[in-house]
Length: 537
Image (cartoon, rainbow, N blue to C red; front, top):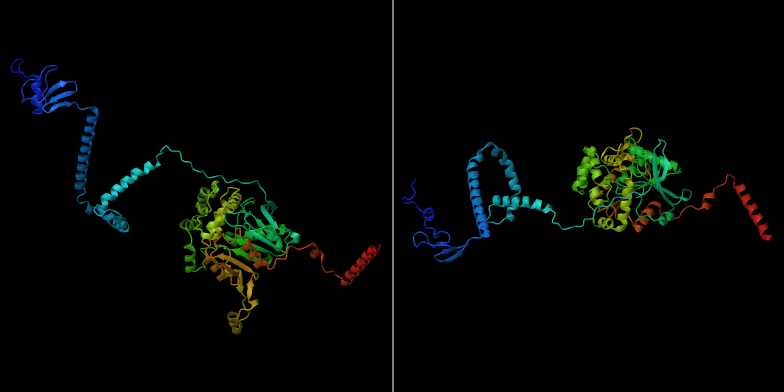
């Protein structure tokens, strides 16, 4: 340490010795710069300025200092990133031969081959690994940004609640104490030429019937049309252990309670078709005929060929296939899906709720205002009790053993005895008396563009029920021919009942044969004579 006065350096000389030839020479405050040109090239001139050999230069502002700091920070981060990359490359040397890499090499190769076509969309001069890492990072950053509220108010139309109307059904009490709700259309029981009972399909109610059917058409053909709520739907009480046998007997008890003593027709649409077939199987003596429209059959039926199954499943959407599999394998999960859709109490779309794929004509009619009003009203009535159990029962019935086969509805007579000639005759002849089971008319209408109940289902039913008459409807779908089509409804009734004759009249009801024709003639003679006397008076 040098003593004071022994060649001690001023603070300017110490600063100059530290910075070397920096080009700037500092002087004492307010003093003049010393004339040593080799030490400092400039000196302080005033506050905020420096004298330089090239002129007077202003002092750096805070903004310039901030820019310099940020620039230096970015350069440091780049150097840090390069260092991390070098460390990572050195660490990954030899990883290809590790146990984890050997285990993942096979699956990674399969995934790379399947997704290799995506590399065709990248620039040719880019490394695919580097490019995809950048794309993934940008996606991860952009995805949260999309969820950030931008501050703009966007009006979103909230779904409306389904409005459940006050109870309006007619009610009867069944022998087991349950209440069944029903609805009548057409002519009265006294004037009915034909009586038709219709069980509804899945997610429907007694209000469906034949959508858009006119009262005038029912009266022209003298039809008494009765629809009812299946157990647990609408206003009908649930059944403790429902199956297709109990469904057929519920229909029979309804007919008896409404005074239908003669045979009646059964109409089944879509899912209601299996209830119509159950009536044919369990109460055939009370059935006059059957009309079905795109009737659903069990897609797991053991009698169905592999080709028939493939034609059915390929027409359905992936979600509809999934719901059928759940109903077959995991029915306890169905309430969860139903509560998320139609049992939520909100209005929804037909296609979304039932996982449907609609054709051109079906799409046109279901998008219409008239159908939408009908659909919302029918669904609201169907879920009146907000209980998923009846819907689960209905879905499980569609994919379970029905308790009978379609082949049981009509079968050939077995000839008694072991006579070979009789056996050969039973094979090569088809006489009218060779059939057993239900011998009444069975009509099936099937839209060839139906993607809900594919035509292959009807072909399967036709194969097992040889006596059924199938009406194939080109370019028609599941709804287009059955719903809100006056001409179609007239064609259907003409096919079933022939020429419209109107309802029965009071004269035809009272015009009954007398036990004694002579007494009947005497009464007429005395009546005529009394009328003549009155006219003479």
